[in-house]
Image 1 (cartoon, one colour):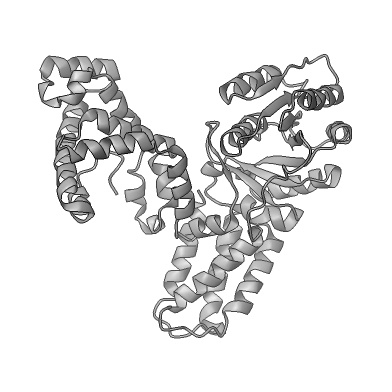
Image 2: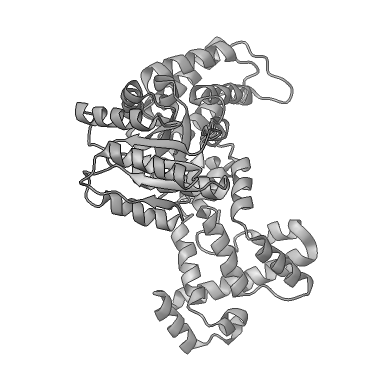
Length: 452
């Protein structure tokens, strides 16, 4: 996420290393680089101008303390201003109202609005322990209502049935009424999208808005459209008074123009980021955490939260107890670890949150591939329980069967078994000598896709 912007800003900071003080002269080139980086990231021009002016005002004349280099002083100023331009702090949904809290979703067609409804329902149900009812007012797009019904079943949310022959206002009003009768905590209403902003669309969403008087009106927009996302959000805000924005497809946005432009142009906070296709791939928007990620500082807080949500404590304790009893690490344990890692967003998701990863060479980062992890899991899953517990029994005929079952080659099986043997030795050292020995043992011995 935001790779190109991160790389450009990192190059700028490197140029300031070795100077004793930040002055107007030595910061002039750095500011020019920052300005170019932001423009290339498709950040709106007014945002770029205000951002660079504020950075210049704060950075010029800053004395370098004993613990900070000029580059570190400058990066702190840049980080603070990135946080400011994106909204200073996370703004949560206003759910402390008489139930049901009503959330109206708006956006253009193709922005991922219906999927975001399901993601938000799942987040509210799992993290906030809310009961959720979803309803679709999209009577124009073929199968839109069926799509939401399917997604509602996947995320275990209640679904309000509607029909393309009905009026969107009637659907929305009846959904809210049903939510009130059934004592539902949150009702999420999905509206129709269009390929562009038009009077008919605005009139319809205004009527729906007036009919249900939502607690939250969220605008869902594709972050890959850059500053156009902010302009579209502004047009919607003028029509229905938005309370927040959801940026989708942020995992595919290497630039970051939308995230850095929306708050300044609309005055409305970004409340969530869509970071993948799965229904669990929705994150609350924290400006300070995102600023740190853009500048290559990682996001350890989000990483810890991911671990707390997804790591199976029982499985971890079971593995620890197994080691204490002197039993060896087997392929069943390895598969469990792979599954835990995928629940936390895979290697690419983890790396995005690790400090210092931005400084890794591009060729190193390109070797990190979650498909390799899926291939490893497929190979292990094609083995029998006995083979997973005792890999030494896997002979030639067993390898052929495993390769056929997992859609891989015998060479892949051999590679996995060799690497697993090295991992077993590493785990044995870890159980005896702690973390220090484990880190040394890790070097160069991780499976494909896990080496960096």
